[in-house]
Structures are given as C-alpha cells and as structure tokens.
Length: 371
Ligand SMILES: *Cc1c(COP(=O)(O)O)cnc(C)c1O
Picture 1 (cartoon, rainbow, N blue to C red):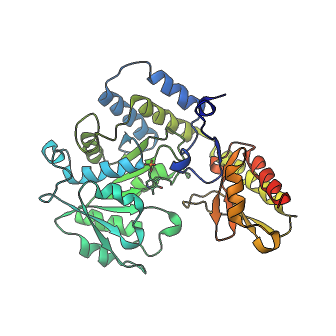
Picture 2 (cartoon, rainbow, N blue to C red; picture 1 turned 60 degrees about the vertical axis):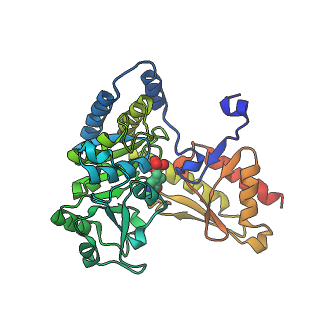
Picture 3 (cartoon, rainbow, N blue to C red; picture 1 turned 30 degrees about the horizontal axis):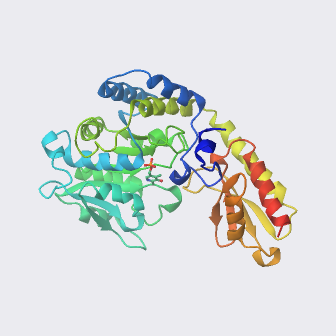
C-alpha cells in the first residue's frame, strides 16, 4: 500500500515522454532527500534563490540563473523581465502595458500552446513569416520601439522555415532586443544547458520536471545577469506578476541537486541503456507477423535519443491500435504510450524504469494473444 493505493489513484507506466499530464519525470533519491532536508528549516527565500542560482550558473557555464516553478512560469518571468527591466514601478503595472514595450516577435510557424504564458503578461504577439517560411528581413521589419523580445520555441526537428537561430541572434544583438529560447524539453543533450547562451541567446528556459528529473513544479532560466535580476524582481516573494507562480524552498533545493545529479550522470551509459531497451522491444517483435518494429530517432521533442516504434497491420491482426491503447491503459498495471501515425505506437525509454520495457512488451503480446 502506498499513498496512491490509499486514495485510489492508478499508478501508470509512462512510455510516452516527460509529459506533464503523467507527472513529468521521476526524481532520483538524492533529489528527494535534499528536498526533505530543505523542508526542515526556515530560510530567506531571496538568499536561497541567489545562492542556488550562483551554483547552477557556475555548473552550467552561464552568467546567471533563476529557479522558477516550471518552464511556463519561465516564459512569464522572461517576458516580464524584457518589459520591466529592474524598475519596480513598471513591474507593478503588468499586464497593462500600453505605454511600455508591449510586442513580442514569434515566427508564425513556431507558435505554441505555451505562448499563452507570454501573452498573459499583456504583450501582443507579432507573427513573422508564413506557414511556408520566414526571411531575416521579416524579422528585421517587425522590430520597432515597442518590441520587448524575440522568442523561439526550440525543437531541432522543426527549425526549417524559421530564421536560423544564429541569424536571429545577430539581428537581435544589432537591434538591442533580447532573444529568448524556450528549450523546456531540450534535455538531453546536457550541452544545451550552455549551448544556446554561448551562441548569444539572452535567456534560455528549461523545465525542471522533464529531462533534468527535478521536482515537477520547477523550471530553470539561464542567461544574462541583468535579465535574470529582472526575472527575480518580477517573481515571488514580491507581489508582482510572478507571485502566483511561487517556487518553494523544497523545489529550489530539489532542482539545484537535480542539476548537479544530471551534470554528473554518465550520459553515454544512459544512452546505451535507452538503446538496449529499444533493441529489446525490436527483438521481441521481430518474428511477430503483421507487426513491424524499428528504432525511431530522434525522440518526440527532437532530443537525440531513440524510441521503439511498432506499426500494426490492423486488418490482418483483427485489432486496432486504439483498442490496444485502451486495453493497455485499463490493464494492470496501466500503461500509457504515444501514437505513431494512424496505426502505430512509440515506446520511449526516457520515462521507463529499467525492466518496464519488458512489462510493456509482455502486455502487448498478451493483448494480441487474446484477440
Ligand atoms: C513542457 C514545455 C513547457 C512547459 O514546461 P513546464 O515545466 O511544465 O511548465 C513549455 N514549453 C515547451 C516547449 C514545453 O515542451
């Protein structure tokens, strides 16, 4: 019996990804232990933020760092920071910013559901380009006195048609406009923690509860010192736009230790583990008729790691992928996987414990036997 059994909540084997709806990621024990220690004492939150930020900045080769309660909160705080700088008078006016810089540039092709977090600060999104592409001139022409920032939602597999990031950085620097990258799910690879800022990006945002395996309600903003100070000014414990996005002492310490844990991981070994799990699935289905199994690369958000892909011949098997999904979800244990096309599925090792790939294979075979 654990707390989930006690209150009647189904535990799920998550073969989709670090998705929020299933709980993000699983924290390593040392992160949980650090959170327990953090929970036992009062501390000054500003002092804790400052010290934790300094450590993370040093470890990740960045000028400055701020811990927030998720990448979406990072979008809110970054947007606010680009508008207000370190002027508390301006902070107090958000989201009513008619007389301030109130435009944010986003590629039409790069719009994201998460840009709500940018718009809630009160800015108007100025779209550049079309569905078929964007020229550097489109970006230059959109910049004016009202431009607060340029945002990119980064996914290595979906950059075609955008102004190349290097070029965007060059334009932003020349015009004196901050460029912010949402890289919430862009871990792995570990190098992304410094790659974007070393290219010249002003702020980069990561989710703490995805690849970093920190608390689900944590996020990380890395980059320019003055802008990070402006993020902190807009955030809890001050009563500005970030006040309802409070990050607690336990999450601050948890993410600090998660970053340390992640940086010290044997990344090569972890990738080999993912490869082995994927290969296991492929081998197990290699002789099963009407199912084709293959290695898919890169992963769902473009991360450089593999997934196993199974494609079902639904007619020949006499069962649809969606019925298989329903049975997996309603079985014991409950298993959630992502769809691949209309009749296939992905098994993503990133969120699997060692051995769970075997449970998934076993359950799929069981379902197929019982058609
Ligand atoms: C997951 C995600 C977010 C939100 O991250 P949270 O830490 O859950 O707030 C924002 N942007 C992108 C691109 C994401 O993938």
